Length: 145
Image 1 (spheres, rainbow, N blue to C red):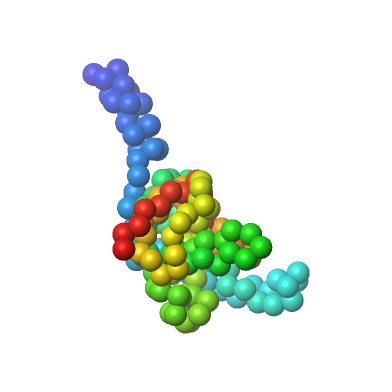
Image 2: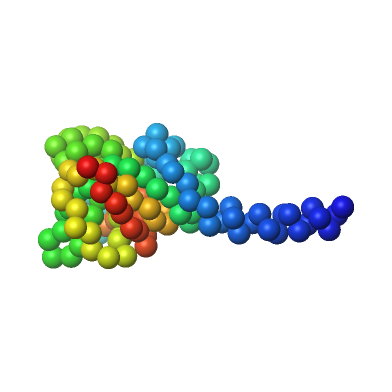
């Protein structure tokens, strides 16, 4: 009996590690923020403290649906937002928990404000103010409409 339980345990580990989780924007609200001074930029930034729910997804393959935003100028910089460009975190006063930075495997053909579904590996970022708090790496996306 003990061998069977151990076998089941070891068989189930890979499935959990490689399972894909579909997150909603409500999942990303499991975070609190406080102001922290940044010497390099001589300004205050919101530093996140991630809650246990969102921490449990770190390093996991997740999928989220939202509005595609292209902030690329000199380098590629893409975001998925809970809101369209006119009311996103940067433009409309929503919080930083309403955006996810996306690093695509291949440059996407999406246009700003198209609704897309993106899948990638979730990274939580509390310290690098040059990147978003939520980052999806090795991402692929599909157009919803």
